[in-house]
Image (cartoon, rainbow, N blue to C red; front, side):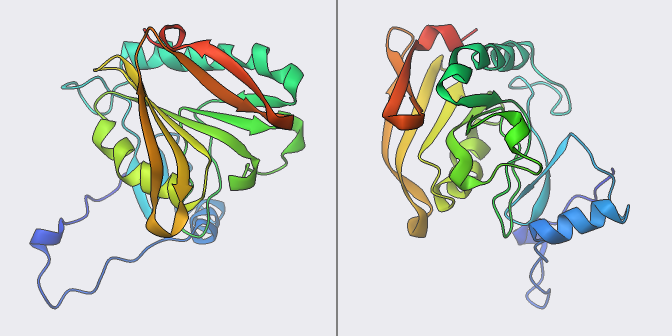
Length: 210
């Protein structure tokens, strides 16, 4: 799918109408009616169709960085550890956060099994959402963070490749579209993932870094 680049706010004249935001329902309808092609390189963020950024910093934004690929594989491998607790790991698949967003995070810890979902998981199904960030770091700290906080996702993790750490955001404040608490976990520390029935899984931070 080829998208025209939207004009920046600086290029809009005072008389221009505001940009039109797509709802999740409109987005799906446009795909069903083949107005848009379903494209694994596009996600719906705050009503805008946005190219996913999985590139290494300074590289072609349409490429996928080697470290990004590795960390997504490490996330997928966690599935074997969490399934016995009644949840599963989903990688690079959509989460429905209507009315205006359907992000496709690099990882998500989802309640239940994949067969429990005829459609896409929603906010109440998500225990944690994870983005692997290199050139996408600014977007992950701003646009993605606001979307996940507004949806009250309880734990948002950014695996920061350039700084070799995990940024941990907790205590979502939906009305303010931000998280109330932030931690930075270094490779020598431990990450705690929430599991159903008030259980948890502790992982060395280094195990999720390249």
